[in-house]
Length: 110
Image (cartoon, rainbow, N blue to C red; front, top):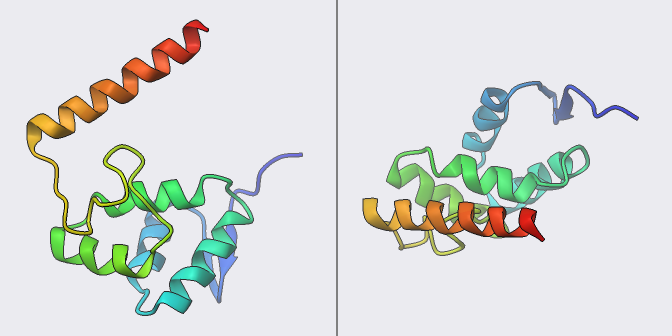
């Protein structure tokens, strides 16, 4: 069975990551955030990680606002505290990416 190429959230069709980001940025309550995560989870098992990752591209103020609303979403590289008071340094970001890549290579070698 093929995965859907789009999905609906409320009255909006979500076809691209840009559409998803627009929907995410329209959120203003925890209830709305939970509803969006539930809908997205129906079509993508990585919904919480994807949202957590996408929030990392936003400016600090918007990222912090949305991480408070999307409580179950965490950045897959920088962790749950990212956007909730913790900001990696350039060196920390490089180190985290390196560690993640190394772990993936080791897993593939098993």
